[in-house]
Amino acid sequence: MAPGAPEVDRAPRLVRDRPALAAVRAALPGPVGLVPTMGALHAGHRALIERARRECASVVVSIFVNPTQFGPGEDYERYPRALDADLRVCEASGVDVVFAPDAATIYPAGFSTSVDPGPLGTVLEGAARPGHFRGVATVVTILFGLVRPDRAYFGQKDGQQAVVVDRVVRDLGLPVDLVVVPTVRDADGLALSSRNAYLGEDERRAAPVLHRALQAAAGDHARGERDAARLRARMQAVLAAEPLARPDYVSVADGLTLEELDVVSGPALLSLAVRFPSARLIDCWPLA
Image 1 (cartoon, rainbow, N blue to C red):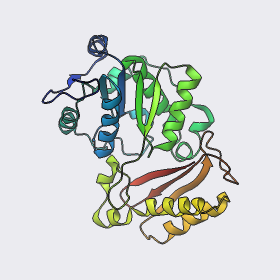
Image 2: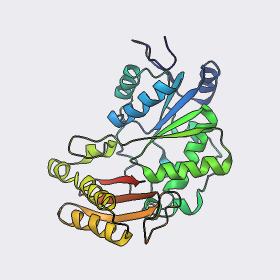
Image 3: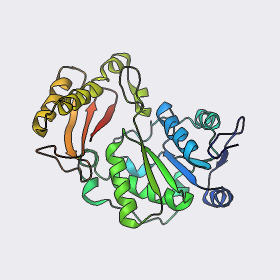
Image 4: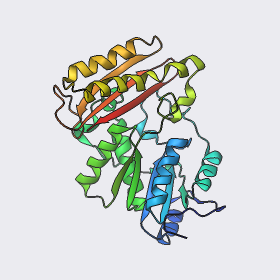
């Protein structure tokens, strides 16, 4: 069997604690790819796993709903949890190991360390959800230390998260290569997300407005528009036409620093967050 090809009808090894993970990890052939998830796996996660499967001899999927990246009043308690279904997805995708710890395994008694990603963690999602990226940076650093992957796979939909994790890896000199995989979308353009399950029928019909707003601004950019204020206004106008959509923010930011731009003269990131009655959704679109 060629490296990276999934075995057929072989369930992944499920490990729940640090010692078991260490024992299993010691026997994995490299390179090892890690797909960090919060579970409720969908086709977007499968795209990450499949990319890791093609590129790595061993694939580890972590499933952990991380409490430290949720703020007061957010959806930690109701976030979808479906371990049995997730294990079936992992088996079908040829995953070698599933690491599904509880909070006490990730944050043992007396745990007091956090990783602060600095200014990148205080804008956009970081401004809307204070402390969110400190939680993300901390748990990702822990997972990297426990799994010791050669490569880690993240989705482009969470564009700011990818930028933050890349900064943490570079600043701390962590020996892992990050791979950002293009967003997987439904036929109507809605980016796949575990939180899409919250949407009612009317909200689900309205939700592709995020993609339409991004497409509109990206199309203007492709036709030569470089004024960032006009690109933001284009996204806002599209969102304003959908009564169920209440924007938190629309952004045209530098692709590395996430600083809001006046003029787009290099790589940039279009991003937005929109509240519907039952869910808050995010999406983004990189501009080359």
